Amino acid sequence: MTSFSFKWPLAILVALSLPALVTAQDASPENSIVRVNATLQSYNFLRPWEKGAPTPRRGLGAVLEGNRVLVTAELVVNSTFLELEHPSNGDRVPARIAGLDYEANLAVLEPSNDSSTVFEGLSPLELDDSVTAGETLQVWQIEDNGDGVTTDVEVLRVNVGRYFIPGSVFLLYQVKGSLQARVNSFTLPVVKDGKLCGMLLSYSSKEQTASVLPVPIISAFLEDLKDGEYEGFPNLGIGISQMLDETLREFTGVDGEDGGVFIRNVAKDSSAEKGGLKKGDVILSINGQAIDSRGNYTHPEYGKLSFSHLVRGDAKVGDSITVDIIRDKEPQTIEMELIRKRPDDFLIDPYMFDRGPKYVIFGGLIFQELTLPYLESWGDEWVNRAPFKLVHANANPEEWEEQDRDKLVFLSNVLKTPSTLGYENLNSAIITKVNGKFIKNIRDLSAALSEAPEYGIHTIEFVDYPKVIYVDDKASQFVNQQLIQYGIGQLQRLE
Image 1: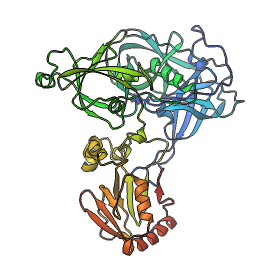
Image 2 (image 1 turned 180 degrees about the horizontal axis):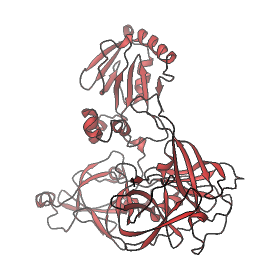
Image 3 (image 1 turned 90 degrees about the vertical axis):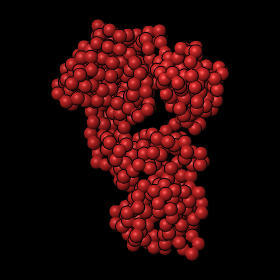
Image 4 (image 1 turned 60 degrees about the vertical axis):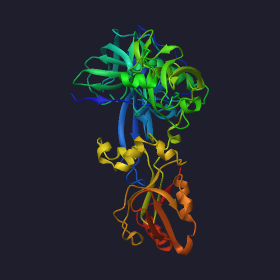
């Protein structure tokens, strides 16, 4: 059997009816889950004016109160069409997203038609957050004929790990059991005693182990959606190093302490920066919870967990936390408010879904804002295959942020046209100025190129080779019209 995986955010559905919650005796896949059919169409980051071919995807969603359906965000990513289907009788209704968080990999769907009969005979599930290691859970699936399938899995441990977005980690249940792949296996509900306790994220057929997104994160997501203003999960915004080396401990002045983690970097405009944490600080505890030299603390129910759970699991946006640190070999206590830095607030967007890459095409020169999805377009080995200078910039954004850039604008490629003769082999060159104006983002570049240049020639400056190029405005404007006429329908996307 091939391995299969699931990863996505959830959205809340509008209350249409309030059937009684399903009891443990009545709990079954046929009673409390629906099929979810999605059509996805992703953007092409190497040819930013194009989109990929539509792709179908099927999964299962857990029925919640108010005719809402919980799924992972990955199931609905870049969706152009969503549909809910009754597990047995096949009734269908178009759906819309009522709540979404790609970082937490959760989404809630609701029917577009309030008079739909898709939920007839189905009962919403209660939530159960009491799972601990050693317990047995059930993974629910549906056969093609509508019959339910229940598979027992054992909880091996509770830890913290990645859901869907690189660098975004949350609480996880690690479980073991043998699951069968089915056509609607992309998202699977996991239950305990007839109550929803999580959503399956990934499964390894070789190891027969799986990761489950647990109810504590689901509950926080649903609670945040209630007021209609979703804020998301806070992030601290630091990079850390373990402090197992005695020389480092002595250098930082914590050789007499039991634990602590070293702050390698602090993200611009993050909770940490706004709260006063600095590169070189050593975090000893958060809200009184001691952090060991590997970055873990002792949770009262789950045992050792990464300290990130204190920020992304036990707290919410707007909460204040107390951080005990060592700075310059002296102890300090810092009070800070937690915020969420959105993906488009970063110099280099860590992810882009449901929106296309920003770009400008001018006379055959293709300019873009650098994003992680652009680098990932080079394949699984993008760290080694993508242009080195761009990979390095992604790993070290601080030096570019210090230049007061909003985004990193670069020449990604060159189409062969009469106005780009001699420049055909240029690519991956980071822009500094256009016609003497410093470029902070793609909108600045578009504005600079739209103005009539001196002597009819645009001057485009780069950080490295070729340092500067000159582009004829009149010839480029003519090429722009030809590009529109012969296949490129949109010469720029600025939002």
